[in-house]
Length: 215
Image 1: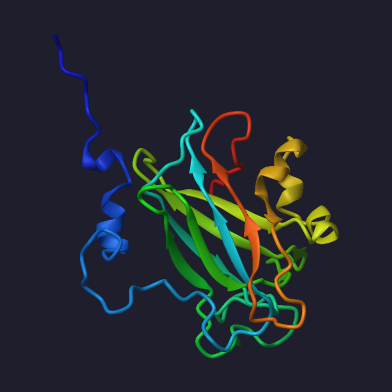
Image 2: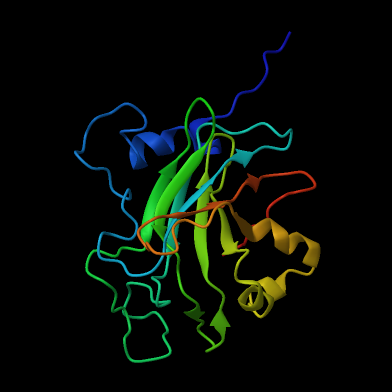
């Protein structure tokens, strides 16, 4: 009997990504604080939010070795980069300590992942069109040969989502819902530091397959 073929390290993005990108999660205590754990920093303005979810495979099973990279604008819709288009002259000017970038690791037992940040504002696109508030996600895990790019939009921004130029590119409009994070609670209206929780599950295959982008 011929033994089944196995994936080689070059055919999968995980679990090696944890060793290189999140060594603490892989059991290697190399750094006092791993890079990418603080997305917004302590000085960021705007509503604090918590995003949580799972990544599911085509059978509906939760993946438990997922790494998700996050990048986003601040509450004013600005990325911390001088070449980022803006509607004013404040290119790249964000609050001290705001990276707009981070990493989330799934729980190895449950597959649950989460991260905390601030809710981004609407972004000025390269063509001058306004892009709805969103968070960019890059997903890698065991069995995913190439990292997957997708976006998270917010269900409490219906008007902005309806006019979003990226959403408009999705020909199968019913699949737009796969990019919408669902608000779970309202936090404390009198405290912007109390995080509002959003739920965003990602499906790699199947009828609820998330929209991924070729960028």
